[in-house]
Image (cartoon, rainbow, N blue to C red; front, side):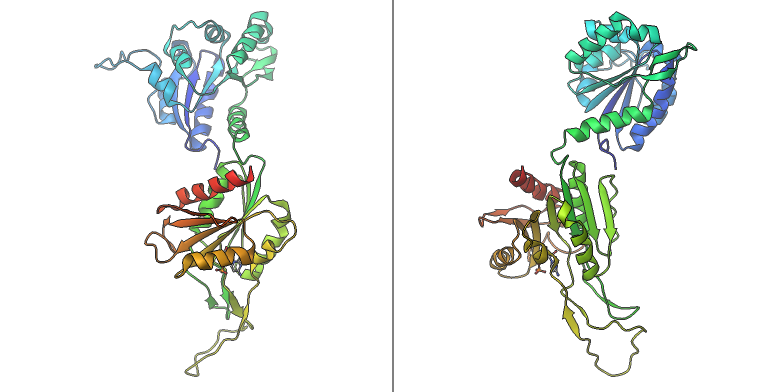
Length: 402
Ligand code: C5P
């Protein structure tokens, strides 16, 4: 998943030949999960059709203050559009539009939207090399920078005029990366790394059967996605689970048994700042795993079990360890057990779920948690979706680690 996912992008298109590349740009932005609205200058419609851009963006394309073709002739509110956007990208921007952006000339809808926009504005100039070098253009770059606009510099290469030099609009992929980098640079967990354990573990009895539990991995998956959204690099060590965790920042390692989870955790634990143990690890595993399927014969069958390593406690005991968050699922005397667990496993935060709470438990999309810190502060939360719960947990971590 991209940092652009869920973002509202206003794309302004002006009248240069590079306008044809905006078809790819719109596709990339939509593919990244952004909602895209396009505003065109009248001149740009000669280079790329509004129909193409509205089809690709799945939104009407606007270029006039009124919809003359529309029999109701409604007014296109530039202020609403400017306020709607999380980010505005003007690509390509011609020398002419740039000079109007500098001087505040508003003779089309795009310029009115630009002047009304409160969001960060990016612009990707495109022009011939001599126009690019011209002192007025260079002056306008500086002016726009002083207004807080972000230039996505033009590249060097073949130009529409047949000449070669600086002035080629940045490629659509570069424009998308530029905006993604801008967003990620501002994220609160930009330079942090985290490890999460999630899901159940399966402890094999024979090639067919195992000891497991009902954990779905939803809570750990939501934590991984939220951390990744906030810029952290995440190692997600996931037991058997169908939960999808698609994000460029997530390195997912699927494991089956507690021992595999333990090994994977200890391979990465030294290099992370935050560790969250949300997995429902099987406490015991069969001493012997039968090579063949165990046949049904006697009326009773005993399987000897041996304790699995406690992964969280093993990290809690490390001299130098990351900020450590554990989970506790209790059915009675919740707070007492939770305090004892936090002490024993040496956690910085312990997230308590009670099976007595209606909104909490396995496989559900909601959870109800209480957070306990080292000073024995007890912070209760309402029943919420697991994504919202993940946000609450991460907010507490950010408060205590920054
Ligand atoms: O002791 P209990 O299983 O209730 O502790 C729960 C916490 O300890 C959870 O954070 C869980 O992920 C972690 N844990 C572990 N390894 C185990 C058992 C539990 O990491 N073997």
